[in-house]
Figure 1 (tube, rainbow, N blue to C red):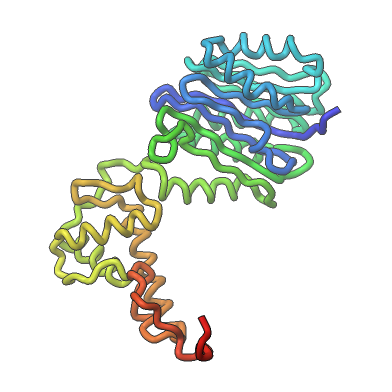
Figure 2 (figure 1 turned 45 degrees about the vertical axis):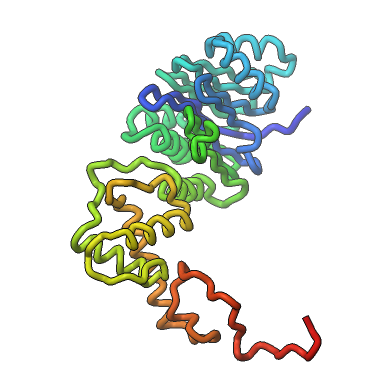
Length: 333
């Protein structure tokens, strides 16, 4: 018998962004390596309890062929002699959803299917866990990421896995959603072992959201001119990316420095060609410059000029060893 583990999860489809996702929590290490499966244009699968991981790829294969979520559940369950110990949630390409809870899943175990989503869980405090997840997903504003994370938090507030917390994961796919459009993994993050995995998952998501995603309202974009341009020039200069004049005039030197900053800080998705800056990037740049000022004023220098050059400054050619470094013996290399 494979190990059983208590888990609550949600599979969902968002039509407006053509996104399919899974969010999951469990008192089990690295649950993200077992439960969530998703493919853009096909659907999403959560396989749990005495999880049959083969249900993941096989479910996606069926979904890719156009099989509906209820039929995928039926086919997978009927073909598996261990089905009574397993749990499954599926959403298809059109948002059809279905779920299954085996009769021998550890109590409390059950599921709730809604419009475009399915919530399922086992070894829970009670039915309020999946019910709370469903209500949170339906009522939370924002996109599929906000709603999936809200569903996890709601399930935990209702008691969650009755044995405690350990790991969580969030997987969201959409066409061309991956890094530089190379695959469909728009969000793929996990917390493998943590005392508060859902909160840690939220924290990690905020980091990914800041750098890798583009979810901000374009109406909030700041035009890089006047005081904004002066502030960006100042902060880029503090960080060692800009050595031009601090005059608030956004020129080629400023654009080049800003582009290099974005590339070195993983902000490729926030690059724009209309001389505007996202508020989140502006705040990140200012925080970095402020931290650099604190570093310079609170750290004693060990290498000449080390504290007068920001981390973005190009390395000096030819090295420049510390005056305290041991001298090489003649003939050494």
